[in-house]
Structure formats: structure tokens, C-alpha cells
Length: 301
Image 1 (cartoon, rainbow, N blue to C red):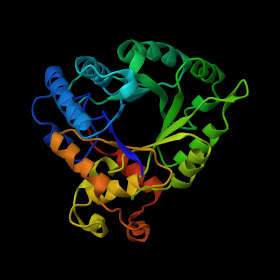
Image 2 (tube, helix red, strand yellow; image 1 turned 90 degrees about the vertical axis):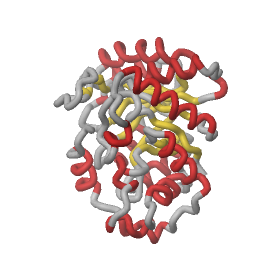
Image 3 (cartoon, rainbow, N blue to C red; image 1 turned 90 degrees about the horizontal axis):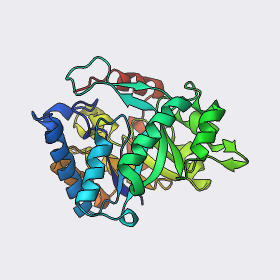
């Protein structure tokens, strides 16, 4: 069974595209307010046994918040696993309702700019650096300059995936070599009972010795809301949905996206929740194109 990690996508910036994010985060969206909230949730995660924390350059000040928490709590690099990502730049500048929240850039120039920023903040704690939302369309897996630079970072390198063709992108990444050696050793992908299409490719990555990290196991909050669409999971669908992800035989880490201590504790409870039978949640799966079209239309709140 996989372990639970904490993803900071919704804790490092004042808005995010998760159902109910705004009310959960509350009125204080200041830098100081979010720093305190992030540290509070990280404390609860640590107390609950979570030892994997995931950030990104585009998650507002998530790397800064995480680094400050690690230093402040005196957590040694050997006691925690920290992953982060490059490839998007946070552009909303803490402004509510900003029309553009982040900008994608998978060029060598972006890597050269963002890697030193991540390294300066997370330093000795940084264990894994990932391309953020790699796709075939971005061309990053064909960019020899980027691949060469990634191979020379001196830390394990992975990629996160997004969109309806996650499996195809992952299979291409599995074959990427620089100097005859694999560039990547980890993948972070969306898998949930609504969008399980990457599962077979993730099993291939696991068989190849990669670390497999699951994100968006609750489908950006869609699986945390009881209703007709989640009826097979019961009156509280979040626990069974998260348990289903944790039970995948190829999964190493499943990230919680909690923004409150209460949500974090509920996610921790999934570790002891019996997972639903695959036949019970299989009817919930939707067409990947439809799933990702809906996700891209979600409002930032």
C-alpha cells in the first residue's frame, strides 16, 4: 500500500482550482495568513506520519513556506522527502481574480532560471525535481538541451503529467536517455476513480523501477462532494476514493491536497479505510477528454 504525502498546490497561493477551496481557505489570504495555514497543515501532516512534501515553483510561495517550516521545526534532510517542480511561473502576484494564474515554459532558459531558485530555498532537503505537467505537445521530451541539463542537476529527476494523454507522454519519457542512461526515475500523475486511464502506464513505470506519485486522487474536490455521481462510494466519497488510490499496486505515494487540519485528518483516515472493490468504482470512470475539459474549466477560487 502507498504512503500518504502532502501536496502544497493549494496552500502556497491565495487561489486554486479545487471545489470548495475558497470557503476552506477562509478570508485571510495574506502572505502571513497563508504561511501560518501552511505551517499548521504541515505540522498536522508530520504528526500524522507524513514524510513526503511536494511543492513547485508555480505554487506561489509554497517552496518558501515549506523551507521555512523545515528549518523552523529542525527537520533533518534524512528524515523527510521533498519534491518540487519547474516549468510554470506563478504570475497572479497574489491578486484575487487574476485572469492568468501561471504561465507554462518548458525551455532550457526556464530550467536555468527556476532550478537555482528551488535549490536556494530547499537546499539539502530537495530530493526530486520534476518537469511540471509535461506533455508531448510542449516538446520538452524532445529538447536535447533541457534533457542534458536535467541529467546534470545532481538530484533525481522526474516529471509530472497532465491532460488526457498522460499514458502516452509517460511511455515516451520511459524511453528517454542521455548518454545511454535514463534521465527520469519518478513520475507524478493524476489518477482517480473518475480518470484512471494512466493506470497501465504507471504500472509500467513502477516495473521499470520508477517512483510513482499520485496527484489529484480526489479530482480537485469533485470526489469530496457527496452526490449522484459519487453514490457508489457512499455518503462520504472522499475516504473510499483516496483509499482506492492508496491501494493501487503500482503507487508509492498519494498526495493529499488538504488546506485545513480537518481535511488532513480526514485524508489520514483513508490509510485505514478499506478500499472499494474495483468493480464498484469502475462505472464512475469518464472519458479522459471530457474529464480534462471539465478540469480546465474549473474556476480559481
